[in-house]
Amino acid sequence: MDLPKAGNTYAEERRGIAAVQGYAADRAQIWRETNTGDVGIDGHLEFVTSNGYATGRLVAAQVKSGSSHFDHATDAGWKFYPADKHRRYWESFPLPVLIILHDSANGKSYWTDARQALRVPGKEGAYIEVSAANVLEDTEPSALFQTAGVLEQAFIDDIPTVLKTLIATRSNDGGFPLSYFDLFVHGLTNITRSIYYGVDVITNAVEYNIEPSDSHFGIGMGEPEDRFAFGFVQFLLAQNLAQIDYADCLIDWIDREMHPHFVAPLTSRGRALVTLIGSEEDRLVATRKLPDEGGLRVAQEGLFEMKLMSYSARFHRIGQFQEIMKGEGVTR
Image (cartoon, rainbow, N blue to C red):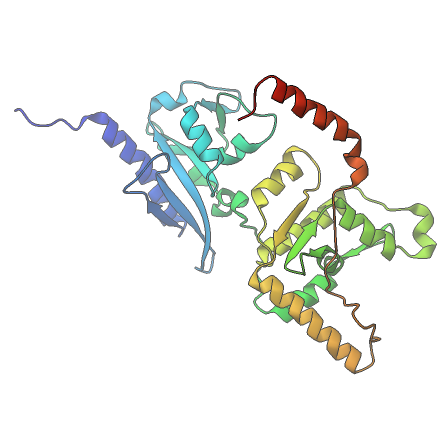
């Protein structure tokens, strides 16, 4: 009979999409397939909390199904070779992009965050490794959304409780006295519309808080203290207080083993927290529990800048470089 033949490719592709769709249904997550305009993204997953709240936290997904995607084995999984156009597309995509390889032979799917892999400095290469340990069907949804800023941390509904939690969350170590409130108010900048985070904010606050009796020991900052401070970044994100690029933070924190540095705009909740701190300060001043120091406020803009000493020695070299390049005809 002379009829159009569907072939195996379409059926194979649908098996992969069906696997992701089934995973989302089983885990009560939202899957939105890209029915038109698919140029490297098959669909989006939205994170839904255990109590059924849609969060607006999204990841994109590109699903590849078939045995050919498992031809290039590594000790930990498989090499996936994206086309250059997709590498550029995924790296610059505004959402995390998951590569999901579906093996129809065993019914399992394997995933990795392709955008994160493409953005990590020093790990650029022709392939992205997909780990055999990342079995989609065995993965808790929050793990898929880690770089989208989903954290296993309870959300605090009311801002007064957020303020109390900032003050109460503190390290009482003699060599590292610090609270999340310290980091919040010390980091405020840009007319208190943004917050700055970096090691300098941490150490400046700790140096001031150290008791004179402990000052001869200096700042004690090891792994527990590092984790406490980085927990503040996670708190800001989990409580929706600032618009933080958490994926970029994780590159510093995990791959480079250092604290991230960033300036992030406060959200409306973050700005409401600043307003609450100001009103509470006014109340304490009115009841004479806190002195009136005029324009000096608890939640006030702090200024920061590039240290001149860190780049002034390069001024002449920067100029020489430009002149040489212009001389070689690279001007546009």
